[in-house]
Image (cartoon, rainbow, N blue to C red; front, side, top):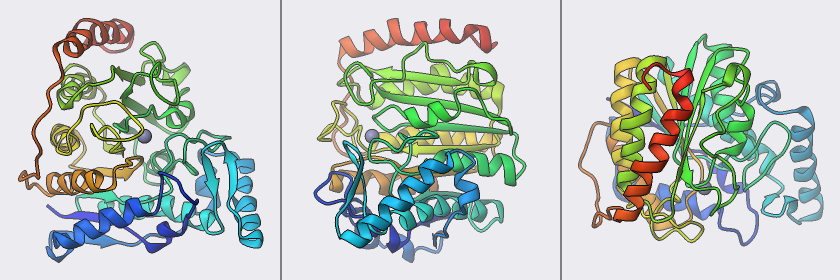
Amino acid sequence: MKTGIVYDSIYLEHRIGVHVESHERLIGIMNYIEDKKVLDNPNFKLIESRKATTEQIKYVHEESLINEVKDASEVARMTGHIQNLDMDTAVSAKTYEASLSSVGGNLNGIDSILEGEVNNVFASVRPPGHHSNSYKCAGFCIFNNIAVATEYLLREKNFKRVAIIDWDCHAGNGTSDIFYNGSENGEVLFFDSHQDGRTLYPGTGFINDIGREAGLGRIINFPMPPRAGDDVNIIFFNEIIAPVCDEFKPEFILISAGFDTHWTDRLTNMGWTYQGPANYLKKIKELAKKYAKDRILITLEGGYEIDKQAIAVYNCLQVLNNNNQLIEEKSKESDKDVLNYVNNKVIPNLKDTLKPYWNCF
Ligand SMILES: [Zn+2]
């Protein structure tokens, strides 16, 4: 098994002052990988980025959004001051270039998989993307990396069925908006687990948000109560993701990976450990083996405890590369109330809601 790691120093040049979505996040990941000598192992390969074309960005974004980012970067360059697009999303002089390369790094990752150089990829990129919709950058995100990657597979690489799994702690509202009515170019299935929108930004992603038209039944939200531990996403996988994918048979699995579900994360209230995402990934990998010729590309979204995130990413790299020896901390199981709520309310409600669209329910 060969695993690609996408990285480019341009990702550090999106510098937005004192901000939790800092370039230090990537430095933390890359230093940790270097300490562990991951890239000395011939089973891992460094993949460089390229700039996605504006035509590719337009697969999912309006031209006005692209111009807004480009112009704000230019103003930042001329004035030496970062420019705000909304209350928490900012642009520096190199943001436009870094954002094109963030998308392009993901596209290079896909190409490496399709050309057989690697089996799967972790794209260590920023700025992140899953809160940006067709017309608005939001929530620290600029271009929606995972959405462009999806359309790239459908439009340029002839794929018919792509599944996106978003395990960032915040709902991937941008990705959900973009594919809410489906895609004209193929079938897109979006699984989004996140801390319940009544308790966390962006306040979306409820069970009855299930898509419309061609997207109907293909937007699948799993809102988790605060304090949910690693075990809760395994329930989501076993009860919902696995049976739906047995029907959908995804040809490629894309993952929006946030590491802000960690129990120490400053922005959220979940109970995951740093081995939690990797254990979830093991399950997803079985699906990819069954239906998608092992094809998985993971793209980095959020995660704000730099040291914990680095370990969690390292663990995911091990799983991608078929090494199940993880760095583990004491497991935190969800408490009884959380498990009762998930098993007796969230899962049955979700199955009922999805019943008309999937035979498995
Ligand atoms: Zn997040």
